[in-house]
Image 1 (cartoon, rainbow, N blue to C red):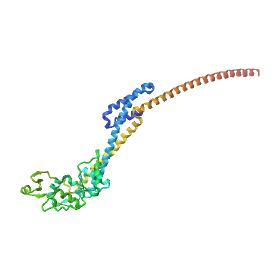
Image 2: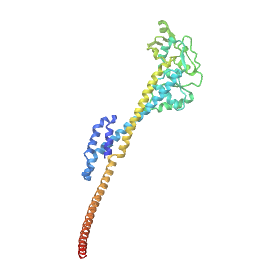
Image 3: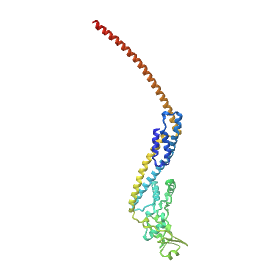
Image 4: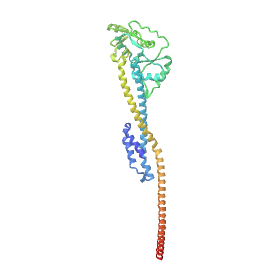
Length: 361
């Protein structure tokens, strides 16, 4: 019971169990006021029910805490892995990826796939058009290209990510097995896209199609599908405007080394958090393991009552044995007293005889 009380006391110090702290203390108080030596079997059973019910409640709650901590640990380990990959990308001069894109890319590579982020292998040949082109492409600039023969596996991996591991909004494209034969016309947006990966270049060019670059209002408004450097886009009779990416938001052709200190700081923060999570989970699991040994009321109460019965039997046997020992000791003491008295009398008789012999001599 003292062991159970110590475990409950430890449970009150677990932040995630704060909401049931008063309930736990009720169980501790019930154990504190229980004197096993002075209660009957029936009273003991009734007295143990409340604290053992508390033990069961804490077991249920702390299991959830342990599960949540394990999930947080796995998530943090994944973020550390992604940060290390991002650090490698920076070292290789590759542009940064959004967190969810990096996570999906890691999932793919962990399963043996070979994804290629489009932004790694393309460039815009005229820097003044880069902000509007990147803005128009948006997240598609981070599309992950996978070989055509890996499309099915990539789909299955992506779809299988659920719950806390689920990833949304990352575009994946299978490389075409045949030549797209895209020949961007002069003056088009697509002709400004070049790169070292033909499939990636063709993929982005296909998004723009025959969209023309326009400088003046007349050029833009009169064209069937046009784009201006300040973000005006015309398609048929419809037109709209979208904001341009600022310089620090651009991904293509940027100096990635400037992100290294930020990534290192993120790694340090994540590593510290992982140490804290593991330490906390060790404490939580220790309490859980101990409480599981105590068990729920339906299991532990019959056991404790059997122990009480055995203790009562042993106590009675010990009491009986003590009485026998005291009784036997008293009888032996009386026998020794009689022997002492007899010896004393004999000694007196011998003393008298000695005295008489001395007188005769």
